[in-house]
Every structure is written in structure tokens, then in C-alpha cells.
Length: 119
Image (cartoon, rainbow, N blue to C red; front, side, top):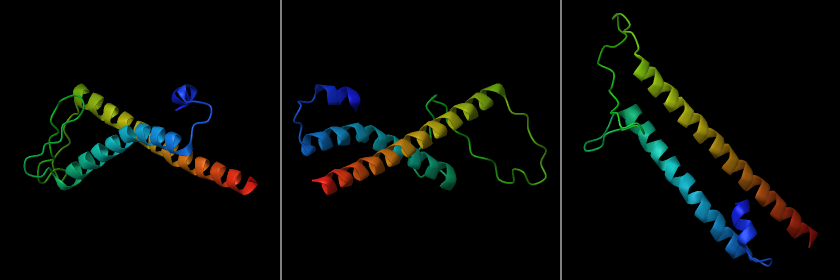
């Protein structure tokens, strides 16, 4: 946002600043929707015609019925651990980005209210 603010004219209006901000938020909204779709598919099982594919291109396998009901635990492979670490990293990045968006919006609205009260 600061890089684009340098390119704006000195008297940039609120509409122009708002449009720039919304363009920047489109990527976050897309990532948020994809994250929600993947979480729903993993929770409810994939719907007909949709497969949950992680960024690495591997298809996620669902747990077999009866898993954990008296069966011995299977050894987790290195590839599965790498996949878990990557998934946790993506979740962490998404949560940090969400906090930044929420806090940024709160701070901007607070600053706008302060400016309006001062005028």
C-alpha cells in the first residue's frame, strides 16, 4: 500500500484511495475463500466433482472408517510430515494476514473518525 501511495498525486481523493485498497484486498479475499473451501472439504468430505488438492499437487486421502478404533498407529512418512508442516505454515500465514487486515481496517476507521472530529 505504501508503494502505491508514493505514486498517487498529492491530493488523492478518498475514492481513489479506497479503490486502491480494495484492489489490494481482492487477493486476500480469494485466499480466504480458497481456505474456507478446503476446510469445508476436509471437514465434510469432498463433494461430487471436487477434489481437495494442496499446493504441492498431491491429493489428500481421507481416513478409513474405523481408524483409531483399536487399530495400531501407522508410522508417518517424511513426505507426510513435510505436507503437515507446509499446511501449518499456510494456516499460520493466513491467520497473520487476517489479523493484519482486521487491525488495519480498525486503525484506518479510528484515524478517519479522529480526523472528522477535528474538522
